[in-house]
Image: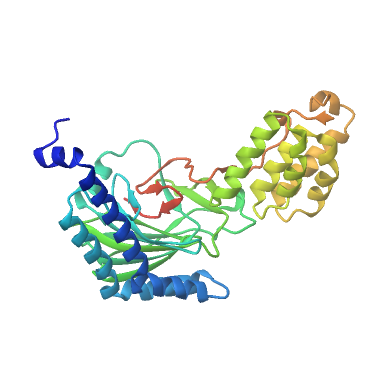
Amino acid sequence: MMPREELSRWLADPQSQNATTDRLADVSGRLKALPFVQRLRSEIEALNQPGADFVLGCAQRAMDDEQGLGEIFTCLIEAAAADPYFRPSLRSLASEIHTGILLFDTAELTLFISVMPAESLAAKRRSRDGRRSIVFPGSQSLYKFIRSGGATFSFWEAPPIEDGFTAAQSGRCSLVERRRIADGELIKVDGRTQSFVIEHAQGDLVYLQAISSADRAPLTVEYDSDTLDYVGSSSTDEISSRTQMMLSLLRTMERADAVPVMIDMLANPHFYARWQAMRELLALDAEAALPHLADMAEKDPHPEVRAAAAATLHAISGADAERELELEAN
Amino acid sequence: MKKIDINKLPELATKVGIHGSAKQREVGGAACGSIIIAIIVG
């Protein structure tokens, strides 16, 4: 790389670099202190039971505060104009079809602004290969399309994703409507039953998106975009996914002291995490697992977990258990 | 201590991938960190 003269000077001058670092810290502090951010934080914290409707209500008020949003960008633009090496302290989000920055991020609410260029959408459409999914994310979102780009969306619905979700009863997704989106339009998407697809856009889309983690479904569910049949699901809970991987590691390491942790995980709110914890526990210490297995077979709220636990219990108690399950005494 | 071969234990009929994993590619959209961007392109 051959840096230009201005960059060469900056790279050779620690004082200039320090000034850029100081400016970054200064802007970061000013952004946190902006009334827009303070007000949104206060409103979220004041919610006694932050259900998704209330959280997205706060987000909508923030989305309608054009002056407050403008102050964020004024702050960033002034800093960038004064120093070409300044970079916004806000986290950036980017994919092959959009670029955005995270404006607000707490456990209850994520708010970001993005630009989706029409040419990226067209390129994405042209580069299609293989099977594709319509995804129902499980969380509730509010979108405000500041510029709609003359886009046409199709709106989809699917059976609700609930705690007792099963592949067998997942049904199919179906088209609700297809229509053009207007500039300034607000769209609420309950990702437990709803999704949308951008069918076509004439220009760039600029939009705010707020995602509430409250009342989130346990799963993100995919349906095939051609057949509309159920394809698969994944966890919406990052913590339980990480915990499952840790339990696998502990079992592989034969850590007997992990048994209490695995027993605790049997009470996880997500059915798939409970059964995975039971499998790990049986593989680590079958004797410690057995009382919990019997309990699970009888009382677990999810039908597939009860069935799997009952089948395992039956196999263990059978005459051929030693051979069938390769029970090993260490 | 008795152990059972984990591969011999049943799995649920409803298989669930870990957070952020996808069975197929989305019609469009992206998973950014822990945020699933629920925008898909037809």
